Image (cartoon, rainbow, N blue to C red; front, side, top):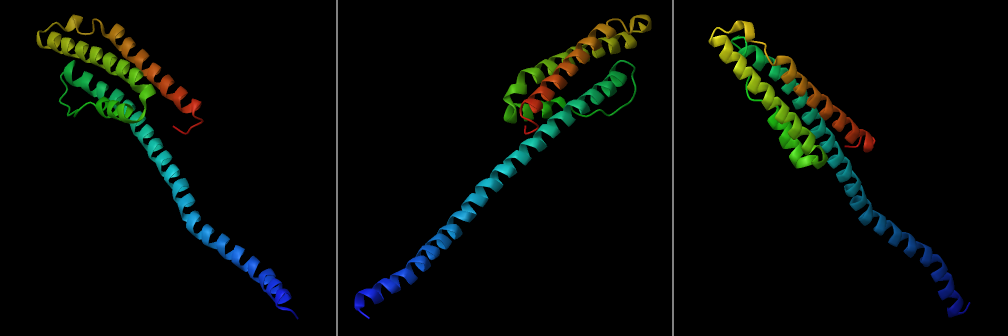
Length: 166
């Protein structure tokens, strides 16, 4: 056998081994990077979904908070209502969901109008004007309820447009 045929036999055996080794090394180096990138995206999506859920829960909690506030201010019930949950919902929208900032601002504004009515009703109660205690309630509550439904619709459209991946 000549040296040339031995060299070609060696290369025919070594070439697949070298290529296989290079592919294995690249797979070992690139695999974790790709895995990290995919895991990172999943983690970010999971965090956004959690924040969206928190925002929605805060909006619903605010509706309940308003009812407690109305009972405390307008009717004098002794209730501890705590801070308004709408602030948390606004903060989440401001930092995560730019498209929902305007709808949540409208909701907050309607909430403020409703609270203003509550204070007025409380003043009437304290002044003994019980006959006119509920004056303006329906109109003010209707504005709040419409804003609440508009926000729900905006949030629902936001989620549907993204196929649930908020």
